Image (cartoon, rainbow, N blue to C red; front, side):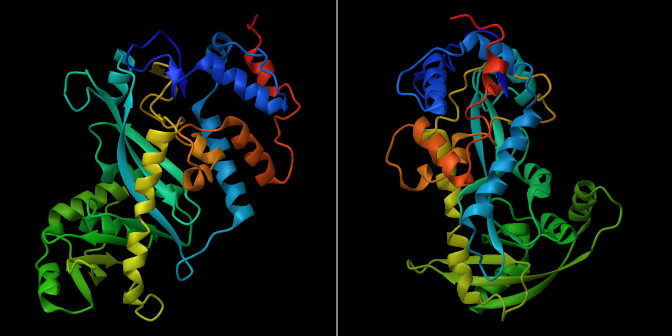
Length: 363
């Protein structure tokens, strides 16, 4: 949730190359089904109204939309599990003192570029962003992923790239009951057993890893409890690429019958969709085109994530797959939202939004 406090020459007064007022006029025109633009809400009224709107409300609306969408269209599963990809990205935010306090001084260390670090969870089959954990630029992706684990459901399979492997993190997944698959590189976790597996030429192997003191300390800190497992049983799977290069995957799925080794290559490849989702959100849907300059006080530090769950991808998931438009289609998105729920959108035909935004609006 962002509130307008002053113009930002770096973020601009436009969202996605379109002025805020024009966007409001187009939105309410599409919402009412009209053909002519009418001024129902001014950008000043919106700015004042959204100061009163808690980020948790937008997060709840986003979560409800995802649940309704998935219940309506269903999801294909991989051997009975829903594949959820996790990855991180950085998002540029307006560079004011308030955002510097919330997200740090950025990659240059001087506040000239202010960025937030984000870890997202994407349901691969439906291309729905289930959750995004937002932190400062200095936060590590592993710590943000730990904070995001509560958004997963029973039956989710977490798939991650080679930037995340750590024995303590794998142990934490086991404690939380989260099955996972991740890619390792030749020096991942510094394990001789992984290097031996690469040299062996075997297609798969179950290994036992004894956690050392540094991993145990990190695990206890992340889990918030003194007791922690000291031994991990994991399965290594070899994937030979068309180029002849070898990838090594590690998974908690030890059942070789239920989860054949030959199917893991396609499973891991499906993780790439979260990369495309980030590109769509940032380049096509103009995620960084904020219309405000500062984080809302209630969302600073504690829950600065409300802008992500309500991104246009929520309301136009098909746009990310099939559309060739350079910018989101507001009318089409609203029509799709109405048709997907099988009933009129709750705000259609009501004054719910207008009552909120027009109390001080005089056009």
